[in-house]
Image 1: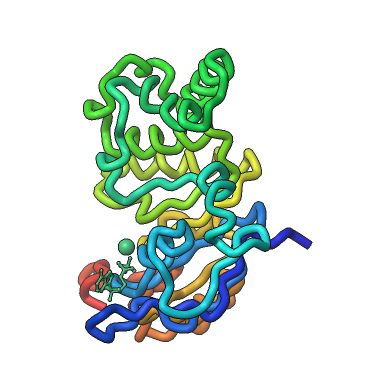
Image 2: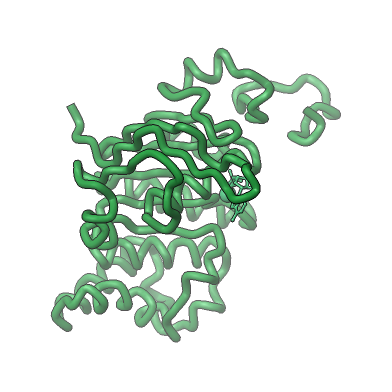
Length: 253
Ligand SMILES: Nc1ncnc2c1ncn2[C@@H]1O[C@H](COP(=O)(O)OP(=O)(O)O)[C@@H](O)[C@H]1O
Ligand SMILES: [Mg+2]
């Protein structure tokens, strides 16, 4: 039985205007799993992620990380949990890729030679070695997300959370990010993916959670959930085949 990494118990976040962003949400996230949290725009994916990282205080309920209340586990969490934000530009710190990737391990106080080795290994793992002296802003969207992954690998992060990893990417960018996800899975990392674009990544996922209005409506094996999908969630079964061209759009649902 896999160990519980995050344990979320009856978590709520009610905004001052009375809107519940997250409502009485309970969820266990296990070590080594690849979990996809999906749901339409505004369903609470990003908010839940921010709460898992301790960036937003709950109104009610509790989050534990490795059995400890989040506020006492925050140092371990910062070391172990890496984040790929939706806005890849917001995450860039260094003047070159190498410098950017070194930022995390430097912060953790690793010795210089260890940092050098870890940065080099991360550059190879993400296929960015050739561009190590490039300014990160010159990278493509897919490469910028891979740069964020490289930073997490160099820190030795065991858990990777990605918020809308396919947002604003062209097809080659999507393929690059999928490669990174495959690599992280093969390396045994725990992956928490938050996206409404489930068709892109579903085949790599162990467990699917559907959020709707801040509540978990479905959780389990993707197949079973897609077989009984309620249209109200705004999530489409990607296995559906089209017979007419005019049906070939998500927005016409
Ligand atoms: N700072 C905030 N103040 C008020 N409402 C917020 C705030 N942040 C998020 N929300 C609301 O919380 C809900 C969930 O948002 P979000 O997590 O960004 O959705 P998703 O990432 O699934 O698209 C939305 O209804 C959003 O309007
Ligand atoms: Mg979001």
